[in-house]
Image (cartoon, rainbow, N blue to C red; front, top):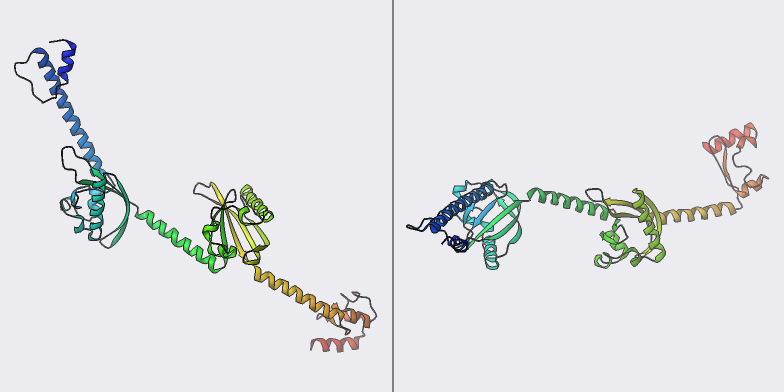
Length: 362
């Protein structure tokens, strides 16, 4: 039986690890091959197991294998370190012995994974010895052939440092928001093509609109055509010049007629890629109204002084005439403006000058 077909069929016989006694040459040769094949398979299995154990034990990420009651069956050094115990003191003990507040939730998640046979991704905080840690974890079923599969593996990634950074950024953002809100400074963020990305509460109050009514819309959707064109031109100029641009505008808004100083500047990502334009709007309506009121008041005063029949002049300590109204010019026989810049001494003698100076300044 040395036919190739017979040899091939013989080699497909399952290996049992022993040589059949009194076998013919073909069977004997094949049995020896199968014995060596089994040896190689067991060798590879041991190597694979050694590699897995090395990866398991040497991983810097905590890895724990639980049964369906959250009892610890295996864990690596990183996981034991988090539990503040040696590995040997953790085996066959429930998670509740170390972190009671997380036990029931972990049992529930394990049962969900074993029922659905799908991985579960979660983010949790854990307080161990009065110290809080944050972890992002993958919970997945462990499949062991020919055994009851009631085990799961949880690999956890420590994101505590990231969380602390997020809190710090959040606190800074909240302070930033409070600063601009208390200062009544409106802040809007726009994409490079003029789409609204974000408005703070002050900017929303100016528009008298809700956030969901604005976010995602374009400038030309909320402003008249001519105004929208101006704002888009400014956004493009900010992008092209990569500089901060400042403008002063009188704007008709749903909240009324407003004056603003607007500051346009780019915002970029961590690799300095241009992401959009920030517009900070400072409401200067009260200041502009006060300025206009002052101008009107000055105009009324000027009209009153210029039209009164009584002579009025303003001189400094040296006797220089700073102002003389039309009536004063007429009284002294001069045309309007001819006395401005002259000195009183040019029109009176020394005795009168002394008397007038005393009258003016003492």
